[in-house]
Length: 259
Length: 337
Image 1: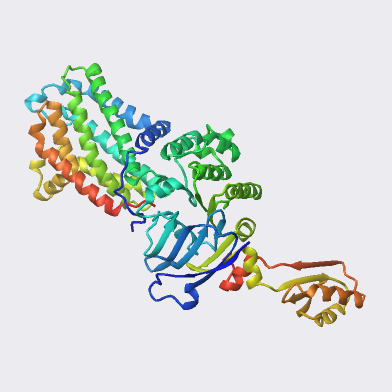
Image 2: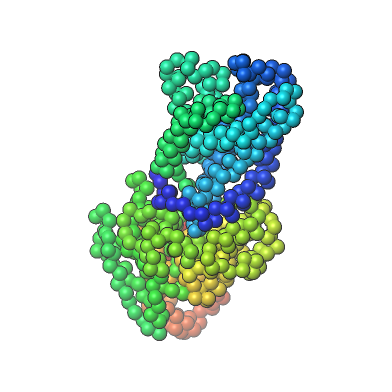
């Protein structure tokens, strides 16, 4: 039941002000920045230092979890935790009537949601950049890290998963259910993302599911970025992520609840 | 003063639920001919099988405080949100300041102020940040700090929303509703949950808004609030408007009778006073004799009769019906149910 008309209405009016405000509010959350920026970076560094000696030789095809894929795995976790955070925030804002109050101003519906997407993308970018920089500095092996393309690939992946997040935010009946529902849908995606088992070795049914969810394409894209592949080599992944983004956005427009 | 009677004919009767008496609404306007700022005709809105608002029509004029009164769940908020453009009605016409709330939502939101029932803000937003954000969204704005000062929450400027008390939150929401110097202010249950002192302060503030020529459209389930604050009220029950008039007009029309309570030990009083012209019933309740009369004209006769029979009286009071009584009479149930 869509209580409000004109979901798709967007305007730049207030976007900057609202985004800046939401950034400040997020930074004030007791565990906001620690949980979303410092913890992933520290975990990455600790695991990297512990198993660092095995990070070499990736080019020769050693692709365990603690190989080159550690960075991809960490980036995917960062991306998914950003989406989980978004799902929870949207559910809390809806339940508290905050979304509704904001809609009763000249702020347009999509402007309000776009501000949240921008905040999540910003913190994802900060975390991934920090992770690659510190990784370069503190990990025992000197590996070339194409951090610009890697961050870009992570952001593209995050954007696609965020659109799925809006669908999930609509499914959550209350704020209490938002986190569990997000967790149940998002974390298993990691299992079939190709990080632990190549997608082409999965059973046909599982492979179909993997292809339909954004994580497998995200992993493929981020791996490519890490290896320094050109974007053109990953047109398929980009297309798939764009398709998932479009489909989820269209679906979210239909099912999103403002209150 | 021009006294005029406007008969509103509902334009879009919904789903065959309309009877002739429902479609005719009498609205008396005791005022100079003022422009209409809100026009609603035949508004209907259902949620599933629940008809929240049915064939709802009204007219609100510039510079008045207009109240939508009724119990919780009567459809007040639904009706108000349809008028604000926050909800899509199933049927009916709405026009606010000559604008269509759905086609012209952005120009309309620039000219109205909205306070929603049970709304919250971000827990960690400060009062200053909320006022600054809101100010940045409108073309014309008033001085936010001055507004906070007027509302008595200037000292809370740097406080976070979650640290504010219920009354302070409500004042902030009123400030946000007024930040763009709106022509029409919508206030939904604005004093619910406030203590009597805060309530009175906010009433004073709302009168101030009206006195500056603005129009106030509010909802309340508090009959006292409606009686003290509103120039005109619409009584709404089960999603339908039952009647519209000034509070005293409604009382006079629907509850002209008076109850007179006379405290006297004299056993004759019940019998003697029952015969006074205009008294409809006379009963003893403890120390008191309780009389029902059809109008206030009975008073002179009562006093004369008491004097004539030398009945000693230690207290004498009349109970004037209130909107609450009007509501009970018109709907058959109490507003508190």
